[in-house]
Amino acid sequence: MSQKVLFIKLLLLHYATQSQTEMKANCAEDVRVKCSSVDTDSMEFLYVAWYKLIEKRTGIIRRGADNKTKLYEPIRSPKPRFGEKHSLVIPSVTPEDSGTYECEIGAKVGHQNQNHEVLLTVHECVTQTDTITTIMNTTQPVPLCPKQEEDMPVMWSIVGYTAVGLTKIVLSLISIWVIQAVRKRSSRRRQQ
Image 1 (cartoon, rainbow, N blue to C red):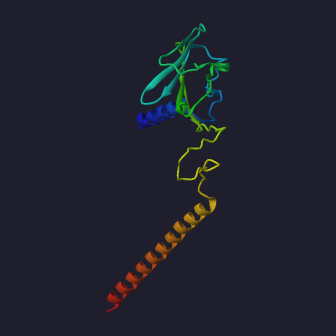
Image 2 (image 1 turned 45 degrees about the vertical axis):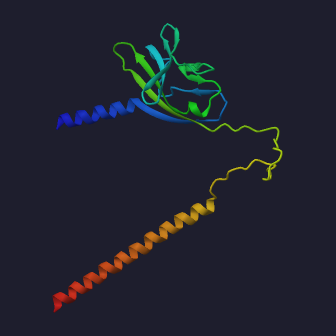
Image 3 (image 1 turned 180 degrees about the vertical axis):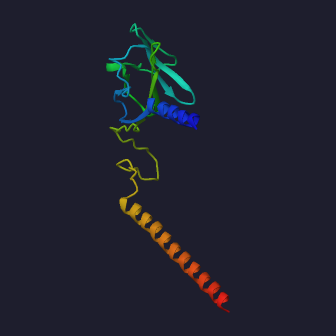
């Protein structure tokens, strides 16, 4: 029994030291990804490293306690860098930069290594065209404004959820009616 309790405590400790934060950014802005669960000012560490988790853990940048910085290959352009409190600064983000980033702090002997994950979502880049190109000898009219896609209106969402809810209620009432009919029929058989 005590082994099970110890195992559960170890699992809770493991999940308490690993956390994930979500972050959203607009295209082409500089993003500062913080290693927020860790206070690097008061902690003695051997290194701070940032990784991007794609199919495997891919190194981005690493800084040792001696403040020497190493960039891993392949490096995107413009290059990421360390920011304030060992945050990761990704300049001019694009949707390709979306994903899970991991901050790893390698602690000195006698202390515990720490990891923190950040899920970064970068919105699509929207470019505005300054000129409208018309093609000569075309039989189709050229629209003056680009067609914009609209999100599904809230009303359609409400109608859909209401229809699903009413269907569940009707099915529940039918189930109750069938159960009552079966009970009546079985009680009549017992009485005969």
